[in-house]
Image (cartoon, rainbow, N blue to C red; front, top):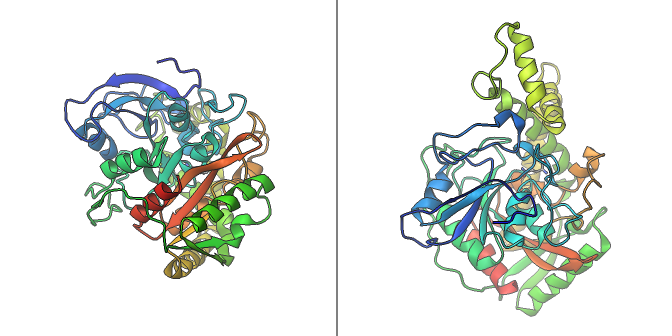
Length: 422
Ligand code: GLN
């Protein structure tokens, strides 16, 4: 396999002997999802040489369904980023225009699918990491409801937000991959005990009430992207959906609530990379603190270090109530907004990203500007609900993603609507 997009961090070709719905299908797996006997680095130098002794639940299910694991895909280090430029192993390139980023953090998975190297891939989505690269590369990506797919074996970044999910070139393949990985797993205490019965995909949009949140077309959304999404919403109406404008007033707090919470969780989740439990062996002749600092300073890239520092600060005595607790309150408001509008509406629709894929290097100088591009994806992770990004046209010559957001555990309605639209 010729990987001209730097989509893969390692390639393998491990066919499964099991027979199932994925028999003969090659699936790429994001490199923060544990794969037995295959290196798993989270695109971080600190995990160089780490080979997990077990498979993530989602990978066990892939193998049981007959899939061939085709390799591990490039990503922003530990999932922290929106362009895949925070990989310690260089950025993945967007197959639609290799001078542009893939989006992130599951950029390698998106490039592998969009570049035709595999037909399906697993990504993970903490604040948009499946939907953003799906949108930028012109493929389909689904962030499942929180608790729908087991996080067992997913190397945690911000565990209260993240889910493993499917990415593919079309809705049918996305649904197929999702039906394999969804379901209960007792090894993840947040995995829901609800069985996942997928009745089968069928195009269905007629009569559905689709809410269009006005905040999804606010400041910062590129005019041409908005126009392309508005045209798609008209198409949904032509297909028989009823649309209405809705409002999510607490969305203004979403970015702050997300970035406070995810950095706090990251500072705690990443403490295991200390050179003793994980990471390169520390110099034993140094005092403990110096040895530990040396391993972490050399192993983590700048964005990961920034987030550990921010999270540690926000959780420290005197600041905890001001930042972490406040963020939890804001999250409740956001969740309530989504629940309220989703009682009257079956689905919400808006852009996935406020822009098209930026040029390589355009976002790296300014992390705050990069965080802002997550404005339309992070509210979904805060609410815990499912959302899918489907290609819906182009702006500035690059793909645009339509984001359909659904009720808790309403993946089936989203997939059926997405199929009708496709
Ligand atoms: N861009 C967001 C972040 O940097 C989301 C990343 C993700 O979903 N893993 O945290």
